[in-house]
Image (cartoon, rainbow, N blue to C red; front, side):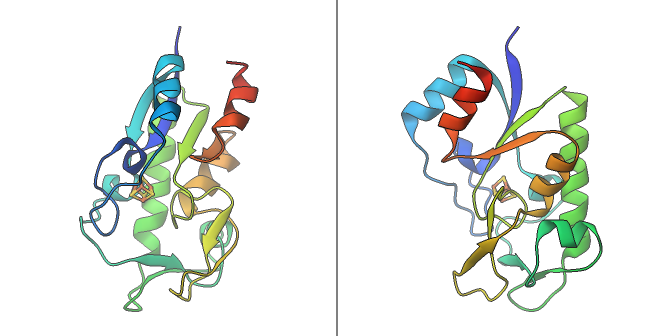
Length: 161
Ligand code: SF4
C-alpha cells in the first residue's frame, strides 16, 4: 500500500500561482517522491475558485493561525480583503485530505495559503516572518504533518524511506 500525500500543485509544474507560474523544483526529489508515495496534487486557492492569474495576496501583518481565529485578514496588494476565500481554501484542502486519508503534505514555502514556517509579512516588500499560511495552519491543527519543498530529508526520516 502506497501512502497518499498531498502536494501543492505549483510544485508539480502546474502554473497555478498568482502570476500563472509554477515553482521550480528539484527533479531528483520529485522522482523520490513519485517512487515512495501516491502524489495527490492540489491547489487550495484554485479549489476555492480564485482566478489564474490573480493579484498577489499576503496575510496582513499576522499569521494563518490568527486568520483562522478571526484576528487578522488576508489582503491583496490593492488592499482588497480576501480572507473569506483563503479560509474557504483551507477548509476545502482539509476536506480533500480527510477524504483521501492523507496525513502528510508537502506545500510551497512562503505562500499565504501553503507556507509551513515562514510567510511574507504583509508589506509586499519581500520581507518574511515566522508563521504558517492559512491552509498549512488548518492542516496542522488537524494532525496532518506539513513539510515544505526544502524539507524532504525530514520527510524521509519521518517515513523511514
Ligand atoms: Fe501553490 Fe499553494 Fe499557492 Fe496553490 S495556493 S499556487 S498550491 S502555493
